[in-house]
Amino acid sequence: MSRLLIIGTGLIGGSFALAMRKAGCFARIDGCDADHAIAEKALHLGLIDGVVTDLSAAIEVVDAVLISAPTGAIAALVRQIDVIAGRRTVIVFDTGSAKGSVIEALRRGGRLPPTFVPSHPMAGSERQGPTAADADLFRGRRVFVTPQPETAQASIEQVRQWWTATGADVVETSAHVHDEMVALTSHLPHLIAFAFMSWVAQPHRADAGVFAGPGLRDFTRIAGSDASMWRGIFAENREAVLEQYDGWMETLTTVGRLLRESRFDELETVLAAAQLARASLQDELRD
Amino acid sequence: MSRLLIIGTGLIGGSFALAMRKAGCFARIDGCDADHAIAEKALHLGLIDGVVTDLSAAIEVVDAVLISAPTGAIAALVRQIDVIAGRRTVIVFDTGSAKGSVIEALRRGGRLPPTFVPSHPMAGSERQGPTAADADLFRGRRVFVTPQPETAQASIEQVRQWWTATGADVVETSAHVHDEMVALTSHLPHLIAFAFMSWVAQPHRADAGVFAGPGLRDFTRIAGSDASMWRGIFAENREAVLEQYDGWMETLTTVGRLLRESRFDELETVLAAAQLARASLQDELRD
Image 1 (spheres, helix red, strand yellow):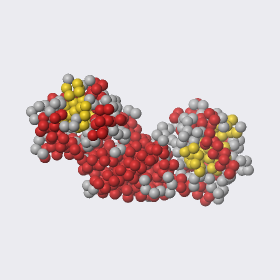
Image 2 (image 1 turned 60 degrees about the vertical axis):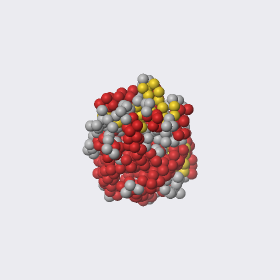
Image 3 (image 1 turned 120 degrees about the horizontal axis):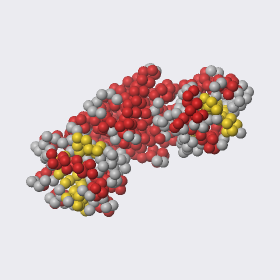
Image 4 (image 1 turned 180 degrees about the vertical axis):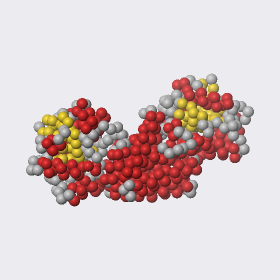
């Protein structure tokens, strides 16, 4: 049995720890966090067996490292682990929402370690921190794995096994397709929801809360996500998000023009197609 | 005990019928629908006691009429009921999402009946039809009542009592404030969600459903709403929706520019304010 180190023991890292305990994949799980209190909390909650204070020393004794840190910090951590591990095999995987920027940063630095398997679970919550950790957070969710030509097949297989043990559905895709598609299905919706709440927060004739119903609650739920984390995601996947933003802006502008010009037949055609697309999506989401 | 007629026996009308049965407010509830099959279905499900085929004859014997029809059809129905009722008191109330356009249409027609109490329950669902009817649909929801100077106090009190009997929280406000605020909290979010799904439905590099998670599901849920119904709502509240659309477009454009110009500190400030606003909204929504 092997040892796992989790860098970043918040919701995602903490949930992975719980899932690994449940599946019995590791003999010992240690953790650390840029915010030491979060690692201590994870220890106190029993998510991890120990808090690491000397990262270099810890890397020397573990077999795998999950990096569940802000996307902007991942490449540097992968490089650091690669240097410390030297010729020992330490499998490294991550949970970052953007893959291309991390891979490019490592290549620019001269080496994409064969033991690094870029991965991204499509799970999360507007709740944060180790107290929200849930052994079943990944169950039934998709985890994207975007191996590169440099990546060792054995490392890919191992990371697939661990994610599968969480109950997730592992899907292999290219970093480029991944980044473009999550820009569409996750990053742009977050940007829109944040921008919408920013507009709601401006002064209006009455208190918006009084006029809010369940539709608004669901529509804006993702705007309750952590602003600092999302700053990082937008920065790392900026180009793909902008591409989706520009495409969607054309659609939104068209819809606005149809309403302004009272072209209701055409507007209804757009609404009906959207309603239909939502119904297909619903089928895929199985909810 | 009195008799109620429900014009429009879908989700909202059907749920009101069930709530009235539960509260025992009426001796008999009849119904009709522009789609006769929907009225027959409501009868079959026990939501109503009978299906009305001769509207004029029915109006002559009832004490109250709930109009749960498309917003664009409400003013003509109120006028028709007023003419048929003559000097009999028949209280009329509605569930339309826009109030100003109905009131103005009646005034332009020469008379806003004192027995007409404009009302709007902030409840609904992307599920439709009498089979989705639920006696508790309005429980804990707000119902806005927008009486006019012409409205009789006794009619207002009676309509308040019925809505209160559904478990709803009745709030009196002006038609203008109502229309502006629901444009912000309901109509604009629907327009955005429809436009977003319209963009998702266009060709992308991969199947969006594969990359969809629970965030996207909640964000787009309202885009599953009935396109024809929403065409009507956008038409009736067009000016207020456009005003909110223009304001929000400025915010969205600013957010897009901050991302394009990599002004991440400023972007994070906007995201953090939005996150905070969402948290306050959450408190008001008590979910």
